[in-house]
Length: 192
Image (tube, rainbow, N blue to C red):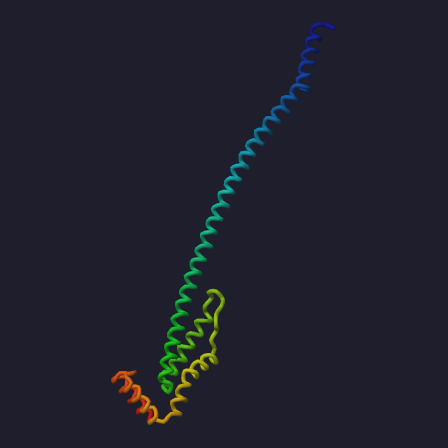
């Protein structure tokens, strides 16, 4: 072969080797390096996103716990208020029943006792506390009022004279004061 042809051949062989063997290896190496960098960046991004998601989750859990605590606090306050209202309604009703025992013929007092009983009944229905509520209905209220007024029937069976006599005996034994004696005596006489 002639030398110029040999130089051309060698140049061609060198270019062909580079293009066939070395260039693809360089390209593959670059692709591998870019892939590694992408995976590293992707892994870092995933870690960052995971940390962000964990912070958001913790924040939501904290907010939910605070919301639940507020709901529980409001429920407890409402129950305490209901307990207080129930106790007040019950106290007023029982006080009125006691007054009715001493004045069983007083129609206004009887009506007032019934109204207080209805308020107490409504308070028992609205109470959500521990779930152990006695619900008073109209029949239970009337039973209470009738029991309180039972003394009226017993008193009416006694004559006015017997009642005044009994009252005098109590005064003589110093079991009641002069003022109490006069009040009761006038009350008995008002029934005539």
